[in-house]
Length: 434
Image (cartoon, rainbow, N blue to C red; front, side, top):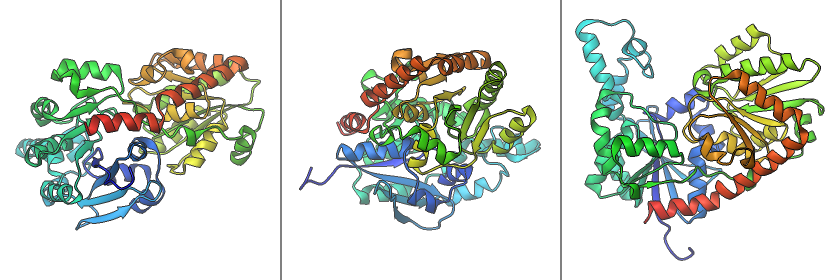
């Protein structure tokens, strides 16, 4: 690509504000820019860079009053921060809990005309968040050749598609779990914006079927592309050294799970119930459950662990942005557990597979696509909401060292062949810049 100007795309995050994400994991924007790596967002940026495409990450913020530019140090990507619109600031102040699903959760116990007004305002509020004129100006100035939204089932996608009709700029979106609409207005607008978009990137077969059934999206405008992962950079570290760093005995058997602490979505109540059963059935063993991550349900999760008096639980209650630290936690384990009720296309189990860990996961969306051949892909899939079967599958892997080793080997091969940055980056380039 030397001597040629690289093509450039703009990447826009899910949610009204970047703070909605950062505050939930206790991270400042400064740390986000300086340290955060991996995950969906930066996996895409890395994959596209390897394919010769520059990505500008555009963030909407309520904590700035004017446009600013930053550099994301781990990837070198440009971050463009736009101040949220004044209309949105005014609207959001009407809701003590803007993220609440219902009017009562968002605004409290309101009645009469005020309730009607706030219900209508809540329906349109997310559409007000994007400073559309400022965004249009920056997209032109940056010379972006396409726009990529994190989710299509979200108001920002609709706004970007409307903007694309004015700028004649292709707009795409990915699927990362957003398979529902949060307002009545979305239900009216979304069928039109889906079909007017340039294309959707969907990794899971079930979501492709849903989109085709609901929106009649032309097949040519839907690409089956998995989330990219830095597989080479996530290879297993020395197991004994990793355990020594964390303080886990070398002869313990370790189950690990990492990610956002959202009890219902991530099925952490099911995981803890399964862990309780696993420990009761094997009282003579030194079993450890290594949880890594934090989130809005951290306090509630601590309460469950204390009330059940669960043994062997080691919880790193923080958002770990250091990829080497994640690598060390995964390398210390024997098996990875994913107990989710809902997912889009989960990155966490692919990270574990890259470290050679066998996977035991629920049949949440995306899991069957990752473990497409079951044990031959390195994992066991069990039904959601079933702690007994989750415990049984984890026990089977822990009880059989040979089986565990072979599943780990297959998991690593699957990660290398299906999710590497190089392979996914080229697919993304061909679809976004066709």
